[in-house]
Image 1: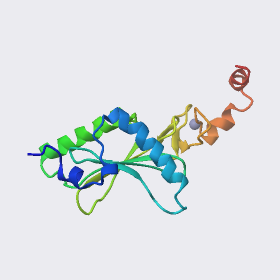
Image 2: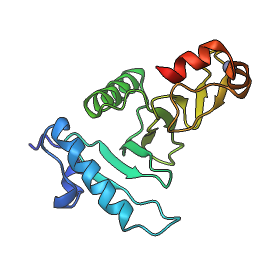
Image 3: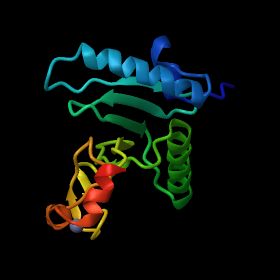
Image 4: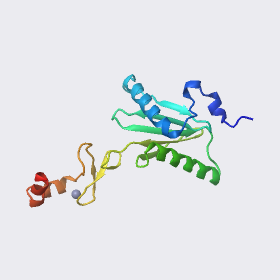
Length: 169
Ligand SMILES: [Zn+2]
């Protein structure tokens, strides 16, 4: 009897992955960048592999240059046990791929189950959003600025001795 999942058996040879997860990540990344370069604007195309136990793992580069990871299964986890297994499986992928901080988006899949994770910049806690380093208020993020400050705190800092200290550091 085969120990591999039917989804793995059905996948085309070039989309089956039976190596380690650590080896999968650089391959996915490379393919995602190649695909992104060849994808017309407005289209969503993914690098993807099916794993022996049936998980479909995909990666794309979004138009805003963030990576987006998608993990899916053909069968919906219906029992508490199955849900726990699914969450553990997701955690394992995130850990091996170094995506634990990314923003989770649960998909409303018509069949099966799918979840997406969008890359966050180092100063973000959600896509496009940072916390002000001074007052903690939520403010829109700028990729090149870290730490982020809200407009009020930026104004308050202007001309303060603290500000001058930071400039000469
Ligand atoms: Zn602030």
